[in-house]
Amino acid sequence: MNAVARLFPAPGTARTARVGIEHELLVRDAATGAPVPIERVRAATATALAFEPGGQVELNQPCGPAAVVVGRLRRTLSRLRADLGRAGIELDASAVDRRSADEVPLQLVSPRYVAMQAHFDTIGPAGRRMMRCTASTQICLDWWPGRAGLEQWRVLNLAGPRLAGAFARTTGDGSRLATWLAVDPDRTAFDDRLLRGACPVTAYAEFARRATAFTHPDEHLSTLFPPVRPRGRYLEVRFLDVQPDDRLGEVVDTLSALMYDDAARARTLAELEPEAGRLGELWEAAAAGDLAAPAERAVA
Image 1: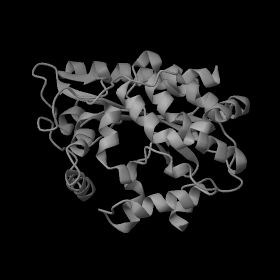
Image 2: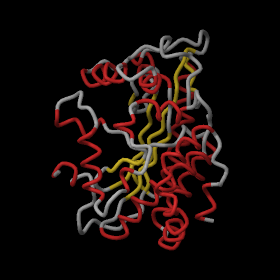
Image 3: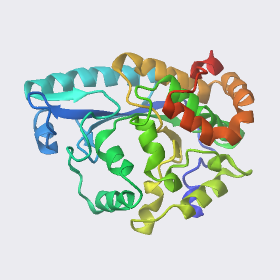
Image 4: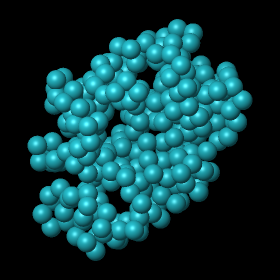
């Protein structure tokens, strides 16, 4: 329970309003369309890069004012595309790779990722597809202590399906969100389980207890992938498809309003709390492209 409690904001945490972005992109050889070894990508640019298991590029933008972070990411993307283009490497801002998981090898082969893939294989093919063939834009937002922080936690979870639907780049059976829904429901929580009861720490501890452990116990919590992940001083929004450059500002502004505008947050909670028990159904509808209500309505 202590390890779980540390994932939630401590009393006295400052009420800052910063944004961070983790932006993933698919990678392919410009001439052949084949996967590109991570070492070749690194050698082609001086830009600091991280990578996802299938060789997807990950750009991590440190927290700061929203407009500054978005502008910095756009400039970094422009430089990176130019660098990689000169090396015959193409970046693809698609949420799902048109290549299959059989065509894209596992490039990160640490014990963690090998164990993760083996575990997901016991459930079905969605795990490999998620690890190797999907890309997301993840937004990190400062998380406040006390009542305001509880509201932030609830509003992002409740608004998640509608936000995912509003900013979806893929829908239907082959979509990124449908893939995530099939990966391992015990460790993804695309339903209302994290909002049940009066204490979110208790709910999260129960979620963690029920998820199958496949790594060292100290790493178990890092292998849980809910749509909104608690990270102590901030919340990590994980449910978005990768966003095109021209929508990054809109996504960040929408999420910032929900998190940092007290009136917008209260208005959204009043509208969405009655739907809490239907979250599982709403996530399925968002994946199918059937969630008609626009996500932006609550913060307009």
